[in-house]
Image (cartoon, rainbow over all chains, first blue to last red):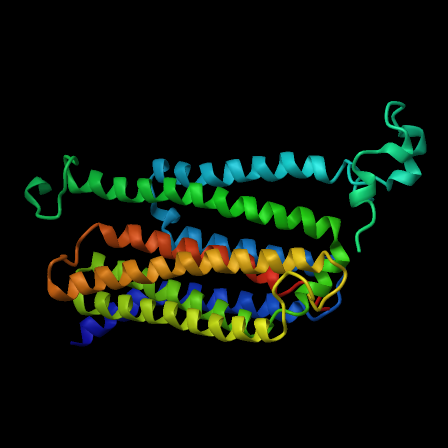
Amino acid sequence: MSSETHSTFKLWRKPSLIWLGLLLLLAISVGSAYIPLGPGNGAINYGVAVTKAALVLVFFMHLDRSRALIRLAALAGLFWLGFMFALSLSDYLTRDWNGSATTLAPAKKDLATHERGDFPKDRLPLAPQFGSRD
Amino acid sequence: MSDASPLLREPWPSLERQKVAVSFGMWVFIASEVLFFGGLFLAYTVYRHLDAEAFKAAARETEVFYGATNTAVLLTSSLTMAMAVKASEEGLRRMTLWCLGTTAALGLAFLVIKGFEYHSDLEKGLWPGPDFPLHPAATQLFWAFYWIATGIHAVHLTVGIGIVTVIAVQLKRGTLPVEATRFEGVALYWHLVDTIWIFLLPMLYLVGRA
């Protein structure tokens, strides 16, 4: 009986520690969200989310003891997800296609020298609909 | 060899190969799910970027208490699901049953809490359309994402609760042996649903709080 209890305890030990870690990370992300840190808030929130997901994937989903085939299948999804985000954001973050500023490109009005001759300013196809957002 | 095992199914030559196939097939499905939710998350990222202030104003209206509580509930359900697999590997039938039952119950608890949250959201009129209470108009983009993302997640969770309940009943009736290979596949799906919620928490509840 006592050896059975002991083995049950051993079975629960590691997963319980990971669970406690996950709850601690949850507390960190919710708590830090109320402290004004500027861009740091987003960095902490998404950093914590990635860490939590990694804990679940590696330990609960057993990537730590899976064979190479399984790990490759798991990575394949993340690989193509990376492509989707990288290629899409390289467009949205750098092109002022809707006439407003982006992180990596200033607003259209500051870019007068870049305006293309074949689209006079008053005939920009997208600007009237999407230029002002309210 | 284990070829004579009653657990072995066509077309697998051995139980070991069958186990790998369960995990491999499930991970391929999970990769497709990652890209499915990834498309939604990408749309969120783009609109959050284009309308940063509107998204902050809109996200301040979500119920962070319900969101955080539900995260804790799902993380705990992942623990009991992982323990169900461990127990089944050890041949501990009663513990497997107990863990599966707790997992399904925690999944249901999530849906009940989500129901209270939806009720509160609707009382505040946060359903995109005419007379939407928030401004600027782009706040409706955030709330459209909120309803779609949490709705699809809830559908996934409901499916998970159903599957966990079915294998628990099969195990209880004795039609499914405790060493069956399908526990791992079900667990992988359950953890996927948990992982998606892990990312929805900062996207929906923790924006613009500081």
